[in-house]
Structures are given as C-alpha cells and as structure tokens.
Length: 302
Ligand SMILES: Nc1ncnc2c1ncn2[C@@H]1O[C@H](COP(=O)(O)OP(=O)(O)OP(=O)(O)O)[C@@H](O)[C@H]1O
Ligand SMILES: [Mg+2]
Image 1 (cartoon, helix red, strand yellow):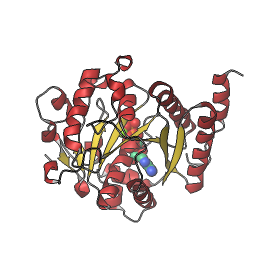
Image 2 (cartoon, helix red, strand yellow):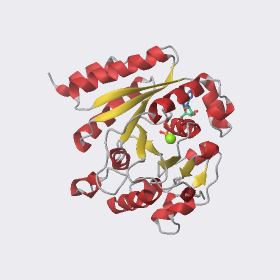
Image 3 (tube, protein in one colour):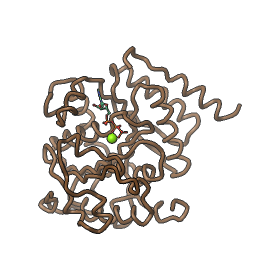
Image 4 (cartoon, helix red, strand yellow):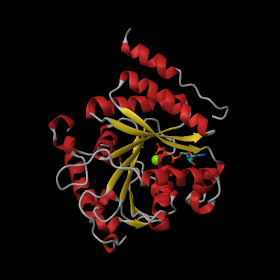
C-alpha cells in the first residue's frame, strides 16, 4: 500500500476525544561546560499553547531551584515578553544587527526567570541566514554556561528556522492540542525532524486536554503511527488540562501559577516541571558548545 495513504489513514484515527474541543546573568556561578540542558518547545500547528507552556514551565522550574533562561525564538512574531507583561527596549534583532550585546537584552521575568526577547513584525528575521543562526548560537553559548536550563520557544511549523532550533537542542518537546489537525501537523514535524535531521527522540506534551486519559490516548495514537512509519521514538511527558484560568492569566499578562497556584493547569505545569528537572539529556553535544549544531555547519542545511 502507498505509504502516504496508510499514514493518513492511521493519523485520521486520532479523533478528538472529549466534547470540548538587563539581567545580570553573570551573578550566577559559572558551571562546567555542557551542564546546561537546552530544551526546545515546538509544535506543527500554531496556537497550541507553546508560549504559555514555556513561561509556566520556566517559572515552575525556577521555583524548583533551577536557573532558567528562555529564548523567544519566534523571531518574526515573538510574544513571550507580552505574555509576561514585559516591555523590552531591545531584542535579538539588535544583537543580530550588532547594535547590542546579547547580555544587554536579557530581561528579568517573574520568579527570577531570564528572558531573551525576540522581535515582532520584522519579516527579514523569519528567515535567518546560516551565518546569522551560527552567530546567535555562538552568542548564546557565552551566556548559557551559567544557567541550568535554556528553554527555546520556537515558532510553529516546519520552516528551516524552527527545525534548526529544534535540532540544536538536547531535547525536543512537541506540543499538541486535542485538535486532530494539531496531531497531523505534529506528525509532519516529527517526520521532517526524523528524515532530514536524523532526530531519534522527542517528547510529547498534550495541552488543553480534557483529562489525563485524553492526554494518554492522544500520545498512544501518535506513537502508534510514528512507530510504524518513522524512525523516531516519542516519550510521553504529560498533559496540561484545558483551563480558563490560563486564558485569564494571559489577559492579565501573568503566569498562571502565580495568579492561580491551585488551579488544575498550575498543578499540571508543576508536575511536568518536576519530571523535566529529573530528566537526563538524551543528546549531548561534543566539543565546547552547549548546542548540537553540527548540522548547521553542513552545507546541505544552508
Ligand atoms: N491549557 C490551556 N487551557 C486554556 N487555554 C490555553 C491553554 N494553553 C494555552 N491556552 C490559550 O491558547 C492560546 C494560544 O496560546 P499560546 O500563545 O501560548 O500558543 P502558541 O503555541 O505559543 O501560539 P503560536 O504558535 O502563535 O506561537 C492563548 O490564548 C492561551 O491563553
Ligand atoms: Mg507562541
């Protein structure tokens, strides 16, 4: 049978189940090289909740005693700063243009998380050149030795920039919502990561789930199709419940765990953060860099 048709059939099984649909980073002591875990949070489909997840997980990890830096890697339409109620004067576009040093654009966020803001509305930054990407990672390398975790909030989709940020991280967390189109898009993303970037592992986080069972069922279905057709293993990281309090917090530009620590979404974020803090990085870079960026220096990914 034609592989495409078969994949489509299997993925179509994934029906919706419920009825709802200037930091002073230098103040941290320097750690050994390669101690920092670089984790990309990504999705095939947009609007599934990546930025909310990155902000809340960052906050929860910081509460657990981790030094957290978040990179807003949605260069064209970054909005992590807005979500956190911050108003950066400078962002990564100023670093890329050479107007500012990377240390100068870091913001202090809630709970002592540090943020590297992206620009918004600069179209040229949605397609960085290979040199610009290497420049960004080289500069990031000078910073991240002093933090425990770098979370990368990527844009949605399968653009080269999104894929490069994912491939450069030690861990990739793919976020899906129960919407079937989010599953097909997640599958497409995993397929490109596997075929083009030889990624062997990723983790799955189901956001806006009705309950734990729905989260596990979505994982089961996606894993089934990935096991059959892709050379990539998926590990279930957990789910975050659909919770109106998340939307309320976004409107107030606050972290949900801060505003509503007892709400169900906050509990989910805290549980996942605990799981992440004990996770071992599956992919470790060789050499001096904290990033797995070998692919960036290979011409085929120019
Ligand atoms: N668990 C949740 N329960 C309810 N609403 C949620 C939840 N998670 C996210 N949302 C809402 O979904 C919307 C999209 O969230 P967010 O901006 O974090 O998504 P995104 O994946 O980063 O989007 P983009 O792809 O555009 O960057 C927001 O309005 C947010 O409040
Ligand atoms: Mg986002």
